[in-house]
View 1 (tube, rainbow, N blue to C red):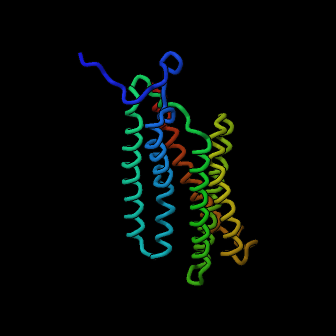
View 2: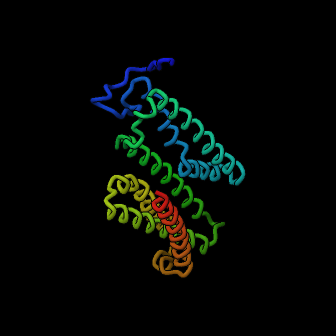
View 3: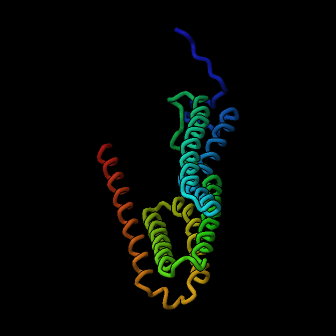
Length: 230
């Protein structure tokens, strides 16, 4: 029987039975690169970047193609680098459940929030143009307000479930949405007191909350099915 030769020096199995790519110098670089690619090409980031392209071109096809390409090629590249990093570790010793350093997740959340804020500001600027009807502005404002409420509810739910880290990572995007929403209210709605009580704003709010309920119900159903499967 051929004897297996380790490509790298692993920690003593009696001292550290499970190993992560971050524990090995050779595996650390491809794993970090995979995480960076994921942070820059995940679906929310791709949508934000596509929105920037839409704002610059006022065309729908290029942003859609760009978003699809970013998500597809990003997922492939990050998968290849991540698996290359894990290949340094025998399967039985892989610590795949270890949480990433908090600074990594916070950094990715801040970058996403910054891009999201830029997109929302540009949308507010576009809605403030004279050719955009007032009712469209109000409906969009209502949907944005609904998004903020959903994000607040999601953060509170995570805290109640003692998932403080997950709730913390959602705060940068929440601040970006709330800040942009406040700025948009003053920039796009000249008659703020009347606009915020408009039925159109309420319709946008209810529409967004309805979408949130449907998505939340679908995620809960998937989670429940996974629990039953195990």
